[in-house]
Image (tube, rainbow, N blue to C red):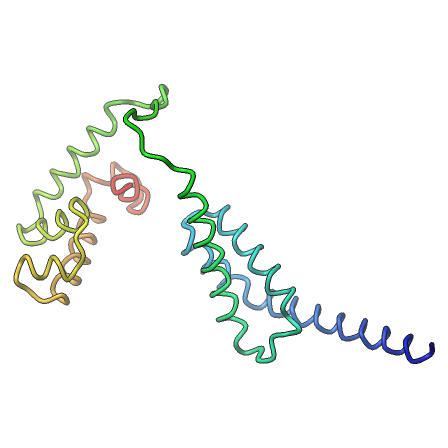
Length: 190
């Protein structure tokens, strides 16, 4: 009976040490872990939920992870898998329909039209090749290699030109409406 009590004490000490180790790991890396979750979900609240689920899963497996240096990769893989699983479950609940859902009545119906007109005007101020690349990418949904093939230019040229074009649009005074660049541009692209 005496050996069993010693085992329980030793087991309890190891658990406390593991909890302290896990807590220290999370406290040290919580910002980068949250950033990863946010980049996966694009939403603050979903990122918090995803990170919480991944941390719970990792905590349960903590004692089985022999290489603690690989915990970051394990957590990122766990977050990715959880996010993909959630995305697949959510996707199963969406069905195509002939009728569009009702739009909220309290929004300004002209606002979207005005924004599109302003965006097309800003696009018109870009050089023709840059405008063409943006339309192919964001309007037609083409990939960089497809755009390069269509325009007979290199993929690197496509990437750098699109980057420069987006930067010019972000800096466009008409698009900003007096707001900071990220808010104004985010509303137009959304």
